[in-house]
Every structure is written in C-alpha cells, then in structure tokens.
Length: 406
Image (cartoon, rainbow, N blue to C red; front, side, top):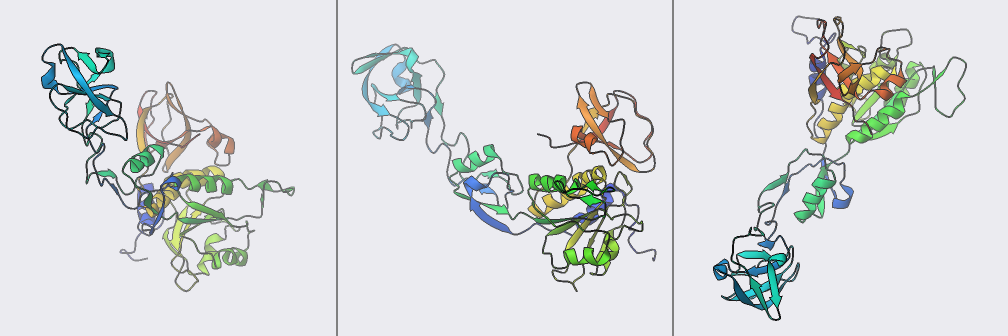
C-alpha cells in the first residue's frame, strides 16, 4: 500500500461513516396519496398555493360590526349571518351588524367581532357596549401565506405535518422511494425462532431486530434465509439479489469461520471500510460489489454477528445510510447529559456503551458483553466514550445517542 492509498483499517467512527455515505445518493421520488404518506420522507417541498385562512375569519361566535359604530353603547340592525362555509356577501354599512360564528369569513366593511357574551339581542337588533374588548379576528394568511415553504424536502412526515399538507390542499406528496435493504445472517450456529435448535445452536435474533429498525427508519427490509459457514452458499445467496443495500450479519471478523468477505470477493467486492476503531463492532466493514456481477455496484454493509455489536453499528452506520438514501439528514443526533455514576478511563477504542437514562442522569449498564440481548432490550441510549477518554466523575457531561423505544 503506497503512502497515497486511503487507509482502510482502524478508521474512526466519523471517518467510516463519511466513507459509507460517499457511496450512496438519494433515491428517486414517487408520488403517493396524502393518506398513505405517514412515516415517509418528503422528496420535494410542500409550497402554499394560497393564504390560510384565505380570508379574514372570526375566532369566536358573536357579531361582526364596524368599530366606528361602537364609540358608545349602541343598538345595531341585524342584516344577516356569516357561518363557516357560508359567508355574508354584502358589504356591511354603518349601523349594521352580522351574526357570525367561529371560522366564518368577516363581511367586507366589518373590522371587529364582539363575542356573544358581550351583546344582547333584541329582536332584529343587537345592543352592544363601546368598543374596547379584544378584536377576535383571524387575519387572512395568519397561518401561512401563498408561496411559503411549509415543509422542506428531507423531513419525515408525521400526523401533524400531514395535517399541514392537507391544510395546503395537497392530495398527493412527492416522497423518496423506500430503500430496499436485504439482510443475510450467516453462521452454522444459527437456528430460526420456532425451529428445534441443535445441541450447539442458538436462535438467530439479530435479523428480526435489524429488520424492525430498518422499517422504523423508513427502509424496506427483506430477509434472506440464513446460510452456514460456506463460501459458495454465501456468494450464491446474494449473487442475484437486487437491493439498494445488502447487510450481512455475522462472519465479519478474521477467524476460520468468518467467510463473508472472502465469499463476496468472488463477486468483485471492493472495500471502502475494513475495520473501525469502535467497541463493540470493530469488525464492521463496508464495500461495493463489482460491476462484473448482476446488479454490479451494489453496496454492502457487514455487521458483526453478536447482537449488541450489530445493533450499535446499525444505529451508527446503517441508520445514516438509510436516511441518506431517503434524502434526510444522516447525522446521528447526539446530546449532552450528566452522568449518574463515575466511569473509569476508556481504552484505545471509541466505546458506545448501552445505557439507561434516569432522573439523576445517564447510567451505563455494568455488563457490556456484546452477546447480551437482555441489556439492549432495557437500554434507551448509547453512551459515547472517546478513545482514551480519561475517567469521568458523577455529574460530568457526556454524549449520548437516544434509542427509539416504544
């Protein structure tokens, strides 16, 4: 390797993520019905094509009048009614009042709404006190104006944002196509939940968790049947696969049974990330399958087989890749929080510890073994400790990445 060759081994988390993101681009957009867009990511902004409300509207039930008529207590002639969807179309003249209801358009000439509690109706007239109360008028464009960007491209749609798009009259939205993510678990030791495991097997648990993560992040997961430790079987499993990203689970290290990279090398694998200076998850890698294979140029993310290692690296790398393909911000959202316990100095690898947020701050679980699924099931945050970080005392601020729970 020459001095100018990019370094592959021992990358920092940020370096590794940057190399992965450099290999992906936002996916094409598709138009879907507004009612089906919850959870999708906007590919094009939502622009207001008219003011909202499109007219001055009443904020209360009451009477629409001219402020000039209320210099003192006075009696006005009732000339009509304005209700939501049915406005009073004649201009209001001096000495006149219109019965008005919440959301109804203000008649031309009126500039004040007097709430009904401050008026007395007397047959075809209404008696009102002098003006001085608040003006209960919602101005035209009080919510948004024509030409205003209501929702930017890259935002994830939720019920409140969908309501805003509906208020702008959008029946359909342009959203990013969901990235197709294919998951392949490897290892002779794996048995599927519901099967009868052999005496030396464990149930495969990473795939179902990763598929659920991908779905929550906006991707479309597809799980392949798990393979054993066989180069030909692993290569055959992904040879014809069409995917925006292939994710392998297990076989990512350098032992005699870690055969995923050797198997994919037969399909023209080129690595951009070989290992990462992280705990857990050092064997995580990323590359591209060569053009000589069907669907050449497919990206591949290799995750370790231990569930904690796979899930930590999924949060740090896989989520960013999915968001980048959706056109959303791929950067993890870290925040500062006080420690609820003291922590010893960290070693040479950046550590992302499973942790729990408590009223007194964040607390790392005592046992961080990467095979423990129970710990991850209880964690609601990953606590970041930089490589070679000194000891940290209780109350000291540390960085965490919140996990989506519930």
